[in-house]
Amino acid sequence: MHQLRFRKSSYSGQAPNCVEVADLPTGAAVRDSKHPGAGHLLFPSSEWAAFLTAARSAQL
Image 1: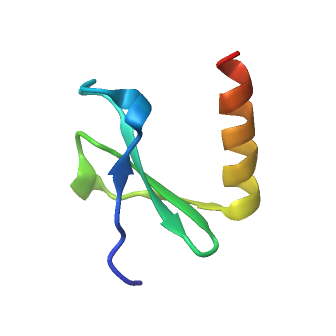
Image 2: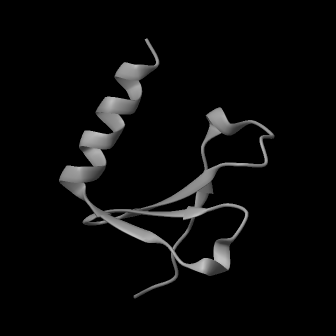
Image 3: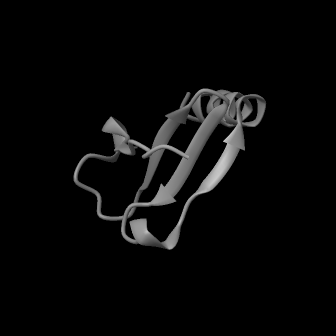
């Protein structure tokens, strides 16, 4: 697998506890920002889209 480019959400601000995400052609990879070397979780596009929809609706 090629090098993943992780980014922190702009909603995280300066918070020390957050996750980072890397976009993939088939979904997303997510890791703990405090422990980036501990690995990451892979989510297929359908699951990632469902998560984003749920997270956005919870912010209302």
